[in-house]
Structures are given as C-alpha cells and as structure tokens.
Image (cartoon, rainbow, N blue to C red):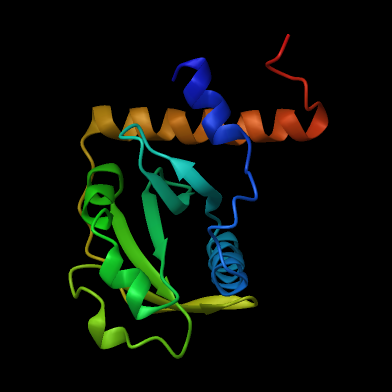
Length: 160
C-alpha cells in the first residue's frame, strides 16, 4: 500500500454520498458484526480502487464485504458490486426492512438492518480466497485500521 492509498483508507470524509438511512444501516451492520467478534471498517478502499461500504475480518481470518443499498434506484445504478467477490470469502447486501429484497441477486447473502442491529436473512455463499489474496487483503485491513486509530490520536501522524 503506498502513501496515497494509506491516506485514502485513513480519512473518512463526510462526502455527502451516504444518506442518513444508509448510515443507520451501516451502524446496525457494524454492531451485528461486532457481536459476532468481527472487526469492521467502513468505506474501505480495495486494491482495485473500489470502495466497499463495510469490510469485516473474522477471528479465523475470514473476510466479509457488505454492500449497503437503501433504494431500488441505488441498486439498479450499481454495476460494481460483483468486483467485490474477488476480495472476500462472503458478500452480503444489507438493506432496510422495507427494501424490495426480491430485487437483490440470489448469489449473495442478505441482511436486514437498521441503526440498532442487523439480521442475516440469507447466508452468503462461501468462496474461499486463495492464500496470497487473503494475506494482501488482511494486511490492507490491518494497516487501514491502525492508521485510522493513529489519526484519531494525532491527526498529523503520517504528515511528518
């Protein structure tokens, strides 16, 4: 990961792209993942340059990506989500309770979520990453998480 990529994964700008509803779903998903013992990061930039809404690292090294959708228009406008499958063992969509879930691809997992938590409605298929990709993604997650924590303690970290 070069310095530019490190900063991309470090700062979580309020770019206005996430609606209040999407942020509520994100919060619920992260709470759910935390209860499972998974460490999660939001707005995580993959090596491909794509940004996953939520990435989670489980205690056994499993990697899960969760794509948040709050409207049918958002889903229909998104053609990038299949690319996430190359960077995780499982891929889920997380949506609010009133989302038309029959429109979601059956090849992914499904979570219903609100600001208080999430529930898995359909397990995602397990597509085990190869060892080299797993190591690369895990290191990227670890570095992004450590940089974010360092930045909270000292916003000038990395600028020295």
